[in-house]
Image (cartoon, rainbow, N blue to C red; front, side, top):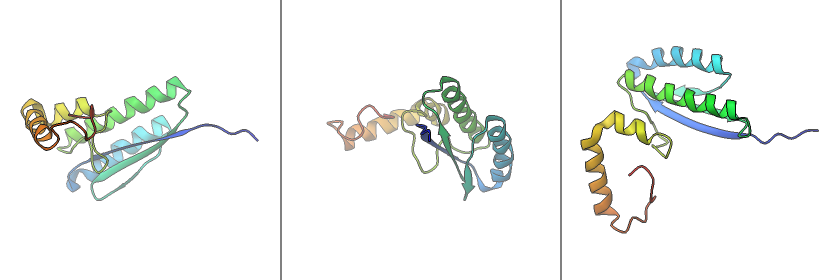
Length: 125
């Protein structure tokens, strides 16, 4: 019996409820084209992707898919993240979504609340 080493990759976005049917249809088509699965509810759209981390083509397809999903949500007046936060993978998308002034405000709040940079150093802000 062969055992394969796969990893789960989770991503999410959020759109206004009125745009949920559209993002479901568009993303379902994208998921099918790329052989990826996901689930949806309450405006939060999650995809749990099982991938082989040793397959560079698959890793690249997942990366491109998650970026397309986030940009699809932004185009629908949504956000590039829902419940899972920005993490490392969506930093550029957050900057596009909220703009430089909002990032400056967030950095100021982070510096005020965490002057020693102990909480998630090097993450997002």
